[in-house]
Length: 128
Image (cartoon, rainbow, N blue to C red):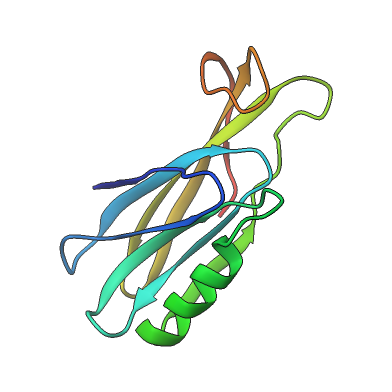
């Protein structure tokens, strides 16, 4: 599997290491976007963590990647803060292959401060 790290104001893209079914994951999410698809140049599944802070170059970075890689997406959406009434974030795990997504799950965590990644797990949710 592949872990795709978060980088403030950037788009970070990770590619699977094989051609079969594998897992990929990223986080923490509290309003950033995530894309899952195939990089057609190398026929590998990718996950992109697209940061959304003010001044972020991430949307432009990801658009450049999409064009250069002839990417096709299975999923592209904003991953919101799981709980609006407290500091929280989500970690998203995807099981996928070049043919599509098998499953997506969100590990939702109550954190001690905004932007934090430490805390207790509140829920695990399957959403695709």
